Amino acid sequence: MDEKISLESISRYSDAYAEKVLKTFFSSKDKITGPEILSLSNIQQVNLFVVRDLFKSWKDETQKLKSPYFNYESPDVKEAFQSLMDTLSNNIAINKDNFSPLFKNAVNQTLMAVFDPYDFFSMIISGKNNRLEVASFQEEMKYIKVNKGPLDRLLQKLIEKGVSEISGNEAFAILDQILEEVNFNPEDVDSYLEKFSAIVPLDANKFYVEKSPINEPPPPPPVQKVQPQAAEPAKSNQTAPPKNASINDSLTKPSKATLADNFQRIAKIKDSLTINQKFMFTKVLFHGDFELFSKAIDHLDRQDNMKGAMRYLEQEHASTWDRDSEEFHEFMELVEKRFGN
Image 1 (cartoon, rainbow, N blue to C red):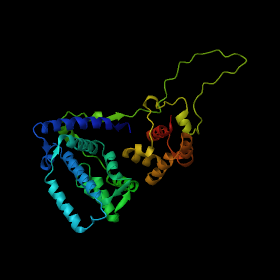
Image 2: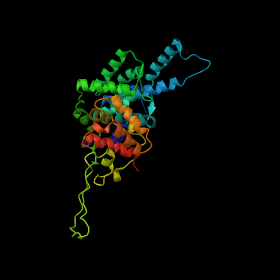
Image 3: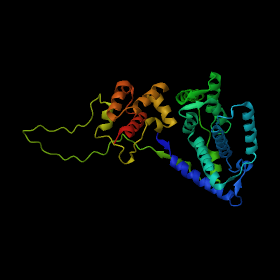
Image 4: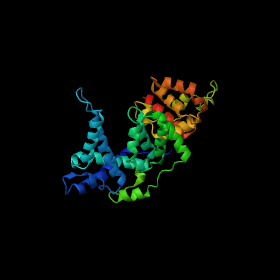
């Protein structure tokens, strides 16, 4: 886990790519139509995400229609709405100002699906209020073409279970099992690099940043030899923690580097986790038990301060953790960002 995705870099490239494509298209036209959207980008996934977001906007608008006088749930009314949707889909006309955010978001989502599929999966299955509606998920899958194998399998399992909705945590646990079963490997990125670079040169290395280590001790200061006085015993310079040091000692002992200049406090650990972190923390620190991991994160986020968080971890989990592992230090970095000053 030496690298993490840079959402800022992906956003910057998305803006640059979108601006180039939109400038070319709208140089000769005032509005874009449905058929033109489907061929606008040289990457079909981008075009499909635009169509998906347009469809979602339509659904959101129709769901706001409620009346004490009219029955919008009537089959006839629903059929009429579907007919209207079919008609509107053939009469799309969007100016540049309104289309630009749709297109930029579609580029961003495509880059995530290609270069960071784990976090992309997380966004797709989190749903509203951590609830995944199976019908909406099934509709979403019509528009996903990149790295969709695990999501297809997840949808199949949910349909087999006969559920209409499921919690995001449960969906994630099922997806975790699927990724283990199929030994998921993301699609090769070379073809996408070529297509993106045909519009704006793309260096995928810029999408990743090295994680700064939090456990590297600083160089020791020079030691001056001083002749001890006869009346006083020589003072020991030993600073190593005892063998059974607590995890609190792991964070607070002077020889540890701190987050210092890179410190950014987070409101909740749960909201800051990437899907890759969820996988790795579950596997390495929580014995592959995703429910145990989820409960631990919820419990930590309910703590008031670092002392309470450390006490909980010591009592419930830390006794089995490898405190030299990268996963341990990355997990503790998040705890420190949650409760540190």
